[in-house]
Length: 464
Image 1 (cartoon, rainbow, N blue to C red):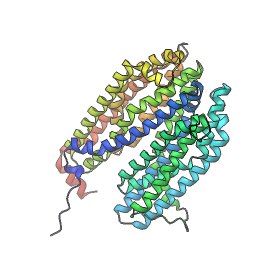
Image 2 (image 1 turned 90 degrees about the vertical axis):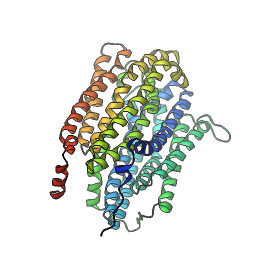
Image 3 (image 1 turned 45 degrees about the vertical axis):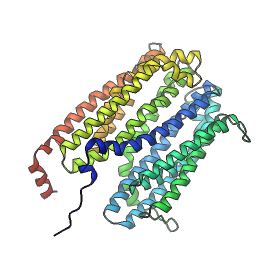
Image 4 (image 1 turned 120 degrees about the horizontal axis):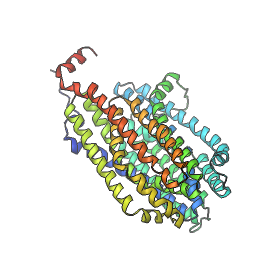
C-alpha cells in the first residue's frame, strides 16, 4: 500500500486564515517599500518643488528598469520551480545561471543607455533648465548604480523559487531602512557627509539597493542549498533563455505600461505648470501606501486560487476571490476616506506651496473617488492570472492606461482647466470595471462553473 501524502495547506486550511497567513507578511513587506518611496520624496521636497518634480519624472525609466528585472525573475522562477519539482537539478542550476547572466546584460544596457539618454529624456518632457539639471543628476546616479536593483531582484526571485520568501522580506526591509536613514544624511550633508541635494537622494537609493543585493546574494549562498550557481564555465543556453522570456515577457510588458502612462501624463500636466506634475509625483507616492497592501494581498491570493483551481475546489476558489475582494475594497475605502478628509495635510508633508495645495487638493479628492473600484479591478485581474488567463489581465492594463486614461486626460486638458484632467482616472477605472466584470463572467461560465460537475474531473484525469 502506498503511503498517503498529506494535502498541501492550500487545500485544507480554513480559507480566511490561509489567505491572511499568506498575504499579511507580503503586505507588510510592500508597505516598507512604500514607506521608503514616500520618505525619499518628502526629503527631496525640502530642496524645492522643482527638485520633487524632477525626481518624479524619472519614474518611467526606473519603472522600466524594475519591470525588466522583475519580468526576468518571474521567468526564472517559473522554469526553476518546475525543474526542481521534476527533480531536474542540473536544469534548475542552469536556469539560475542564465537568469544571473540575463540580469547582468540588462544592467549593462541600462548603465550605458540610461546615462547617455538622461538629458534627452528630460528635454523631451520640459524645457525648464532647473528641472532638467536636477533630473539628469538624479537619473545618471540611478542608472550607473542600477546593478544594485538588478542583482537584488534576481537573487530575491531565486529565494522565492525555492519557497524562502521570508528572506526576501529581510533583504527588502534592510535596503529600505538603509535608504531612509541615509536620505537626509546625503541630501542635507549631516555629520561628515557633504550636502549633495538631489544627487544625495539618488545615491541613498542606490546604496540601499546595493546593500539589499549583497544580503540577497549571501542568503542564497548560505540558506538556499537547492540552487548552486556556477558561472566560471558558464555558456548562455538559448532554450532556457527562450523559456524564461516566454513567461517573463508578458510581465515585462504589463509592468512597463505605467511608464508610458506617467510619461504621457507628465507631458500633459507640464503644459499647465510644473507644479501640476509635482502633484502627480506626490499622488503617486501617497497612493502606493493604499495600493501596496492590495498587491501583497494579490501575492497571497493567486497561489491559493491556482491550487484550488487545479484541485477543482470551486467552493474554496470562490471564497478566496470573495474574501480578497472584501479586504481589497475595505482597504481602498479607508484610503478614499483619508484622501477626502485630509488631502491638505498629506500635501503639506511634501512642503506644498499654496499653488500645489490649490491644484493638489481637488486632484487627491477626484482621483481617490475610484479607489474602491480599483480594489475590485485589481483582485479580478489577478484572478485571471491565477486561472491561466494572463492575456486578459494584460489587456485590462493596456486598455485602462493607454487606450482610455491618456486619451481622456489629453482631451480634458484641451478644455483648459487642469482640475478636469484628474477626472481621467475615474473614467479609466470605470472602463476597467466593465472589462474586468465581462472577463470574469466569461471565466466563471467556462472555467469555474463546470467544477460543479464531479464527473468532469475524472474525464480530464483520464484524458489529460
